Length: 330
Image (cartoon, rainbow, N blue to C red):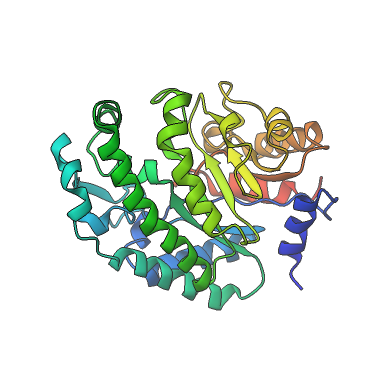
């Protein structure tokens, strides 16, 4: 029996849990270069705060290293792993993408981390692995997002061919994550499901079909989460995605709030904690007060409390503790 899992299962079913579930997640840049380091720091973070589920937050380059992206690991807590050489340097490089040899070493490392984590947490809580959508992965293969935007406008079929290759690789990886112990996938759109980069029509062509192919491979997982990132997001495009939970920055006034989003999606929602302002710069009392307000305002929503995205490593520890304590006294 797992109290954490039972709490979340109640929310997914529309039942009243013993208390509102909560989880926060962040990068630990100094620990993410190895499977052992990543597993250790994820487990330590969980032990410290006793979250209701664990999002495994790998380095944000693991998905492109197989195509030859060169990275520099940093050993301080505030400087993220840096990509210093990108696989796609010019538009013509997309034409040779299908012959680029892909190494699965970085993916195998993530699977090892998952296995190590699962051995420690056993069946105590849901563990989800972060995977980026195929369009997001394609966007990280180039130096700037505008390079991919130009490519999908000027050479759409070449980009589609690349997206098919990416989708095949990461559909397989998603299944392997479940086999390694993950209870679901945290599928993240990063910058790509927003009108700041694309039109809805472009996302429907270059994003959605590939997202769905991955999700259908893992549809049987108990706790898949879709993360729709950034401002001015395309939340309405994801109503029919086969996931149990959707996460977005509902504190961002350009996006729907939790109640509006839950009504639109007819799913459980994850969010409600302003990670960019309140959690980072507020006081513990302000954090506690705001969480109480969010829960009261969304009393009829299937809600899991969380941030709108990965929290900053500079977030004060006292604010994390305040967020965690808040759900115990609601």
